[in-house]
Length: 122
Image (cartoon, rainbow, N blue to C red):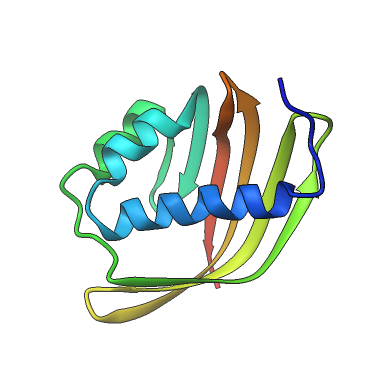
C-alpha cells in the first residue's frame, strides 16, 4: 500500500498522459481494459459504461491526433484516492475538441487505477 504524498499531482498527471497517449496511438481499448478498476465507470458523450463497454467502444475507434492538458488540479480523496480535474484540448479528424475532464484514481494492486472518468463538452 502507498500513502498519498506531495508527488500525487505528478503521479496522477503521468497516469492521465498515459491514457491520452493510448488514445492518440490507437490502443485505448486495451489500455482502459487494463487500467480501469473492475467496477470502474466512464461518462463520455453518448456512453455511460463500465470497463468492458469502454474498452469495446475504443477498439477500432479513430485515434486523436493531438492533446493538451490545461489547468490541472488534484483533489485528494482520503489516503488512497485522488481526482484529477482539467481542461483538455484535443484534435480529432483535424478538428479541435475542447472538454472538461475529471478522472478519479484509486490505489489498487500496486498502481493507480481509474475508478471513474467523465468528459463534458467545454
